[in-house]
Length: 273
Image (tube, rainbow, N blue to C red; front, side):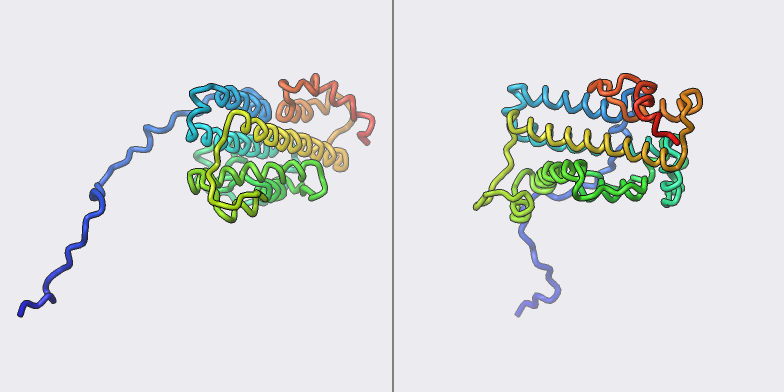
């Protein structure tokens, strides 16, 4: 009688065997080009490119490419939040004091230029959602976003776009039961996300709204903190060293809302005490 004790089972082969691979990741990266636009105008520029791309027939006919446009839209908004939060540390002494209390990885000192160290505070942190943006705003600036505010409502709407991003990243567009509940969808059977050029436009509008509301909120809160903290003295020759960098960070040339820093300054100068 043959014993099977010394034998090993022969498992069925369901696929090709794995390989030993040496991956050279450095070939995937290149140095960042200098950016001269404000964070909001950089966001606008790329969002416009996405809209134009989505309208191309060969792109719209490709479901995968259209889903990738949603990913890129959320990523572009997230970069806006990173840039403006990092930048406000450099232009607002009150925010700099708050941010200085946050821990920083030692390796960041070698990687980031001094004026970009604010990025290090956001390393490993997601900003692709309402809660993430609110939490990091408080952590870095000390400013809270209330639930009944305009910016709070805009971020709630943006959260739905971010939920679509989760659907794409984690399930290639297949909508799970949790997504259905969180998005409040009237879907009764398993479905896949399908994005068209027409349905992509409202997603951009909602994301625009969140970025605009946040940009206005953060600028106003900084100025209010300057007025209450007596950072400004009421003389342009003295105050322009703070006002000009502040408005360079927040001003949208694309929107044309603020003609220049001095004109904006004159609008609230009388309230400086």
